[in-house]
Amino acid sequence: MVTGVKGKILIIEDERKISDIVKTYLERDGHDVSVADTGGEGISALKNKPDLVILDLMLPDMSGEDICEAVRDDSDTPILMLTAKSEEEDKVRGLGLGADDYVVKPFSPREVVARVNALLRRTLKKKTLLSFNGGALKIDVDAVEVYVDDRQMELTNTEYRILLVFAERPGNVFSRTQLVNMVQGYDFEGYDRTIDAHIKNLRHKIDPDSRTPRFIKTVYGMGYRFIGQPDED
Ligand code: CA
Image 1 (cartoon, rainbow, N blue to C red):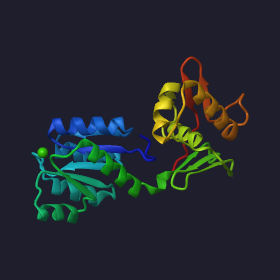
Image 2 (image 1 turned 120 degrees about the vertical axis):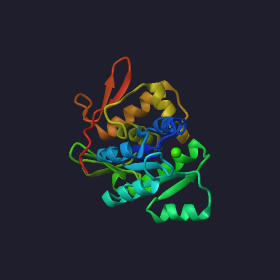
Image 3 (image 1 turned 90 degrees about the horizontal axis):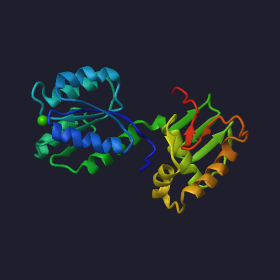
């Protein structure tokens, strides 16, 4: 599933069963996930500047409340709290501490992924403008607009989805089959060979000089790689 925003996520949770499954689901969704088993580890992992923290309210060494306060003192990093306390008062207290959202155990991992993506979309707004090669290629994910050398390009829906798959994961090589699977959620009716036709059209629009491609490179025998260099925020 392509959601437009992928993040670096820190899970602070002492129950391995829970952190493992949440990590698996988030990674499958394209996020970069690390796990801390204790509050202390969690606090020191904050220096890696996660985009979002998933925090268990009940930890052995520190209270989730204290960690929440520590995160808040330091940054605006959104916090999704995991809580086994379902009483209304505890929920309100959790949010009062600065947690941005919470889920009550037992929860479905899919629900956690959905909440994470919603929080990231809300808080990482600025990152919905993807820019490469000194602004030579810009993708405005909210407006669904693509600019090449400051000229707006009209892409078909499929071309846009393919470009977004690439641009969200610069450097990765995608096989034709992978690309078909990743854009299929958007009514893509095609097979491996038609993906080549879509990519050819997409390249023609964003990379007119096919001998020295700036953005999409053919990897012979494998598929395609996006070679655009992401610009700093
Ligand atoms: Ca716990």
